[in-house]
Amino acid sequence: MAARRDFTRESLAAGVRAGEKRALARAITLVENSDPLAYDLVREVYPDTGRAYAVGITGPPGVGKSTLISALVRHIREAGTTIGVISVDPSSPFTHGALLGDRIRLADHFLDPEVFIRSMGTRGHLGGLAEATLQALLVLDAAGKELVFLETVGAGQSEVEVIGIADTVVLVLMPGSGDSIQALKAGIMEIPDVIAINKRDHPAAKTMLNEVRSILSLDKDRAWRPPIVMTEATRGENVAELWQKIEAHRAFLEGQGLLEERRRQNLAREVFAVASARAKIHLERAVEGDNELRRLLDEVQNRELDPLTAVREIMEKVFHVSDGDGNHRPDTH
Ligand SMILES: Nc1nc2c(ncn2[C@@H]2O[C@H](COP(=O)(O)OP(=O)(O)O)[C@@H](O)[C@H]2O)c(=O)[nH]1
Ligand SMILES: [Mg+2]
Image 1 (cartoon, helix red, strand yellow):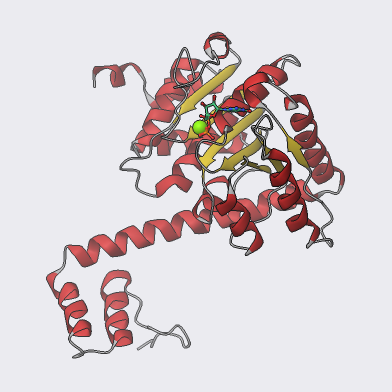
Image 2: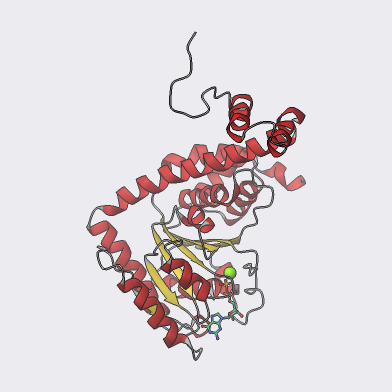
């Protein structure tokens, strides 16, 4: 990688702080690859972050998240706001020129120096999606982007960690997103702050609206009642209204003094989520590479060893935690 050589930690940090696209692109690539330089960079710029407003856009594949973001960016740029977009959606990546498989041209956004759009892969990322997304958000925040969109695919629980860092979470659905409706109903999916029902040109859009409404009506005690906006992203229909609702949620959080509180909770949860993800990977690798630990699993399967004794031994060996059940302090002799 010859291109690596032209950035030192200092020049990368300076480039990121200046919002230079080339430095940002490199920084995000380093984040994707869990490169130690990305770790150093974020550690250095972290004290300058916390200024960007992060909007998570989540929902099942194909509902129009990327198209909506593109339309939102077009709308918001009219006010001069600087924007970053991180999309962890391998099924419909943002590419220069166009949104893959779409008529909408994104070329304007890519030429705009105040907009940074990036699809991010997460292959080989140590701490998983949550970690990569968090680091990428911090990089764009340090670059002075006033608004950052985080796109993630999801219709259940796993994406919660990824956009758990967002200040406002928008769930995008479309007619036929029945699984998500079930997940909302069952409480598996957290109630978002704003719901967009996209593809309102679809004949079943109204039915979808009624279904979502009836689910939200079950929960009347919330201080913030999630608004529902019906959009047609490809034609920009109701995109201004969607943005208005996102801003209204922000105003609600700020007006009630809740934004600071939410961010504190988000950061704490995020640190815990990333640490948990790393611990899990560490554990899996340790067991995989250790014949003795793998033999424990065999012994459990053969009913020679009970499960909790195996857990205790694994915890001792991998994490040096001598107290398997966590109820009493380790011996101190
Ligand atoms: N009919 C219709 N199609 C849409 C609308 N919004 C997006 N699409 C199409 O739906 C497909 C998936 O869009 P995309 O933004 O990639 O969805 P994502 O996977 O949620 O990011 C694309 O072919 C879009 O052109 C809409 O409002 N109406
Ligand atoms: Mg997408």
